[in-house]
Image 1 (cartoon, rainbow, N blue to C red):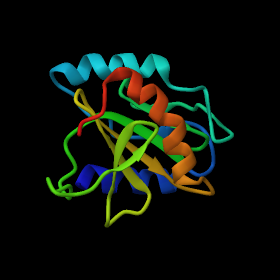
Image 2 (image 1 turned 90 degrees about the vertical axis):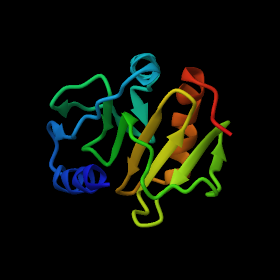
Image 3 (image 1 turned 180 degrees about the vertical axis):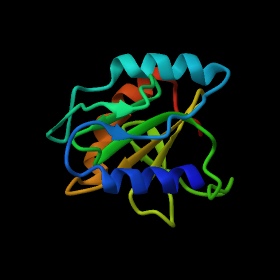
Image 4 (image 1 turned 135 degrees about the vertical axis):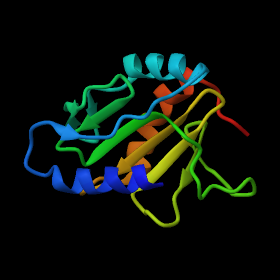
Length: 143
């Protein structure tokens, strides 16, 4: 949870262009393979923003624009996610919306948790729909 909060602060400070600082996750097991595959499937443009760069460089992180959209693959299960929580299904992928952070969403798949922060002028549902296709190609969603 602390890493997610740090990510949001870093994204808020990113506003002026250049490289965006994002704390990369450290996936283990099958998440390493799934996240490596996902990295090759992510779009170059997302909701009108071009893919940017992050520091430190990591195959498990992707950013678009000035960091208003950031993806981290291979994060731990969200601490706030209870076994009884309903996931919002978008494009065949179950998404957990963090109740404490309205810009933080986590795709729940069998292979890896994929955290996405959607800020700025972006519409979360549209961004998540665009990301659901490559995420669903990596692993079928958990039920």
